[in-house]
Amino acid sequence: METLLMQIQSLCIVILMGIGIYFRRYQTRHVKIMSAAMIWDVLLILQIELSRSAILKASKAVSNTIALNIHVSIAILTVLFYVFMIKTGRQMLQGNYKIRPRHKWLGWTTFSLRILTFITSFWAVVPKE
Image (cartoon, rainbow, N blue to C red):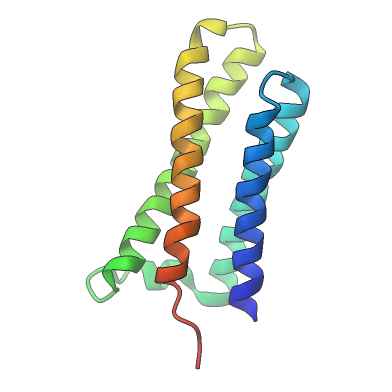
């Protein structure tokens, strides 16, 4: 049941990001929605850590399944891309619109990584017996 709730949250985050992308032309709305999605995603990671000791499991990369290692790698990349999204987004909010092509590329890459994180989570999670 716990795994299902986390999968539902993950799906909701992906959907929320999609809604944020849809409203990309409405700056205030876009920023609020995407900020909420990123914060929720980081909170979900903390929730997973607290309930499953995910960092300890992930640190045993040699003994983990390939699916889990791929999932963890993509999830870490996603969070790293959040940092770049925040940085370029803030630059645009300050009026530097020359950064827009980079922000757009980073955004689509981040969204793709988040979708891959969601997909790989189904193979990486081993339900408790």
